[in-house]
Amino acid sequence: MGNDKTNMFVAIALSLVVLLGWHYFVTSPATERQRQAAAQSQTAQPGGTSPADGVPGPSPQQGGPSAPVPGTLPTPAAGPVSREDALARSARVRIDTPALYGSIALKGARIDDVSLKNYHETVSDESPRIVLLSPTGSPNPYYAEFGWVGQNAGPLPNADTLWTAEGDLLAPGKPVTLSWDNGQGLVFKRIVAVDDKFMFTVRDEVENKSGNAVTLYPYSLVSRWGKPHTQGYYVLHEGLIGWLGDDRLQEFSYDAIAKEPAYGGANTRGKAWSNVTGGWVGITDKYWAAAAIPEQDKPFTGAFTERTDGATKVFQTSVRGDAVAVAPGASSASTQRLFAGAKEVNQINEYKRDLNIREFDSMIDWGWFWFLTKPMFRALDLFFHLTGNFGVSILLVTLILKIFFLPIANRSYVSMAKMKAVQPEMASIRERYKDDKMKQQQAMMELYKKEKINPVAGCWPVLIQIPVFFALYKVLFITIEMRHAPFFGWIQDLAAPDPTSIVNLFGLLPFAAPDFVHLGVWPLIMGVTMFIQMKMNPAPPDPVQAQVFTFMPIIFTFMLGSFPAGLVIYWAWNNTLSVIQQYVIMRRNGVKVELWDNLKGTFKRNKNAPAKS
Image 1: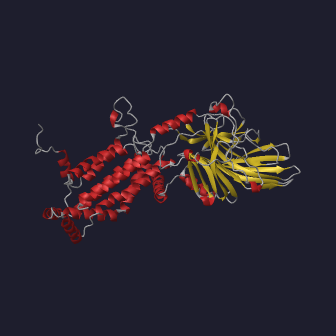
Image 2 (image 1 turned 60 degrees about the vertical axis):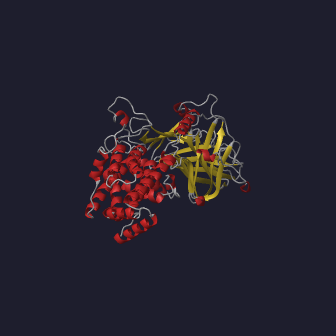
Image 3 (image 1 turned 90 degrees about the horizontal axis):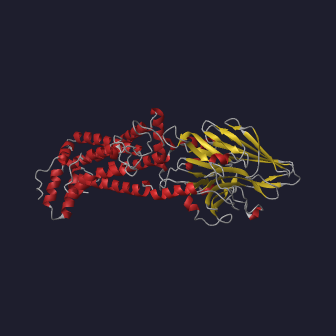
């Protein structure tokens, strides 16, 4: 790079390449694919009965059953009904906590009715609350199940078992006890408790009143019928997820699990991990999840499966504990947990710490650059609790980052200022050696050395901004704390694009702007600040570079128009701070700030231009 103009051109070009790649491979939603997935999710209906469920059975050498069948329930011949009618098919124990409401079905004792009190489908509090779990027979079944599998123990609880409840309300500090007698000497008792957020604790007890010893295996599972609508972004995992001991984090999309080998029965594919200690398995959406959590100090087998049930795909994650021997007259118990709710960062971290759930914070998709995204969230969250506004938090964190990188940025701008000061000498070198590029470069390098100029220093301010941009984008995109987080004025959701549009003059014209045009007030503000930042420097002598510099703010304005508003606000604020910083440094180094001259030159008509014929 031979001068400051080239430095800035290369830096901005690099930023543009990264952003274009990011936009193409990451942020551009696969619109048609999402539309098809949404249509499939709405039309897919559960039906039929499957002989396999994906719950890993004991291995042959353990002498246990080869393929237990929990997790299945045939849909009535009449087909699916409304969610309300499906709930009415079974007597229920009501769930009511500060964060959740719903019910547990006494038929099957499944946790299959959970809605989130504090989250709505849109920014309006009048919109429907988020429904997380739904029963079989409804259009989109999604539930958790607990129980025992084994052989030679007589009937075991299954999806058709009618349990008896002691109490009709499950609430924090008010557990519910369910019981069932299999009529052959085994009495099952299930004690379900819930905290004030999203964690259920399920203690399964079995008492052996028969004259024979029995061997049982505790299990838990999360089952989802039909492929749900997904965001379709590469930076976000949605689907089957779990931490499986030393096998660490396992993530399978809904499409990927179907490509695994056959497992557990006909029409079933999947993967299992045996002899695992510590971890959990579940199914995650962008903001919500359901996860089965076994006892952390005991080995278990985990499995992810996909099976075909009629015309419906059934996705399931499950865990099965080791054998539990129950002698005549003795009792045994197994305690497992279910997380069903919003992936609130601090709450997830609290569960990991207080319940000692191994790597439970991996439920949130921090990505490969977690060492950037996690600190970014912690900083934003800290200032949010101080100011009460995530938008203000973004402004403060950006300012702090500017101060933190001030020494690097100062050296860059000082070097750029020095290069401006030696522009006449550089022009003289180019003229003197215009026919000998080698000598021209040598003379330039000698000049840089003499004046102590770093020719690549101009790249650093933009290069530093790129990882911050990525980290902030990831935090805005994945964390539920940013969902529906307001700023000021018309920005009611920092995680969504600016809702205004230049097409209808920002709401002044009486029609809605088309969805494919995302060019609101904040993207325009960002474009203006970027334009001003570029005009701080003289126009490049190369006409091609000059055109690139002219159109760069326009390209970025349209490209960032569909990005989360919080990210656009950050970019505009960062540009503003950069302009102020560069202005001060240039003045301190005695270099003329050419902003106003360049602005006049941009808008001034070239009187010397040849007239058009």
